[in-house]
Length: 206
Image 1 (tube, rainbow, N blue to C red):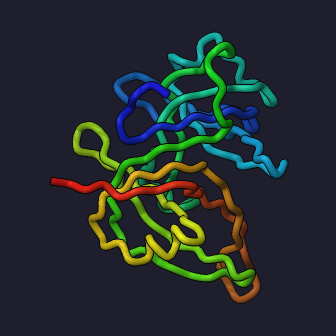
Image 2: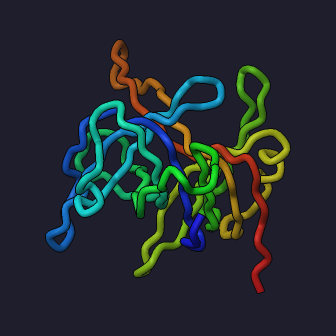
């Protein structure tokens, strides 16, 4: 990976939805679509990708087209009233050429700060999990707020880290469907996105 310092993502997958306009900044339009990224288990994560129109020229974004992309995992607040309050997307910086070095199809590295007290829990199947919200600084005084999940020994370790701790994490982006109750008899299916952490370390700050 080239150096984006504290937020790097590599994805390889297949276009799974039509590109639609996300937003426009200073006359530059940005589009979003889903990328289906296969897991080793043959399941898949459907990850929202955002791309500038300037990168889309000459790019095959038809359903089923294969893409290798490099970028950052970003968040923004959703004020539309529809969907999740926090929207998570992979912001594309560039495409990866076929002849570049081998890499895992779903890789993320973040260097940020714990900004909410970690929540430790044990699943019905006995797996230890700790939910962590990481604030990752961006240019111009902005930050991305990225939900992360640690497992096993890392979960026990993360549980006791105080808010403000600087940590580095490595893992993959995963999508997870869940049902939200909106009335006594009605549920809606929503999708959560988070980083499943495979390695982490704290950073000693002077």
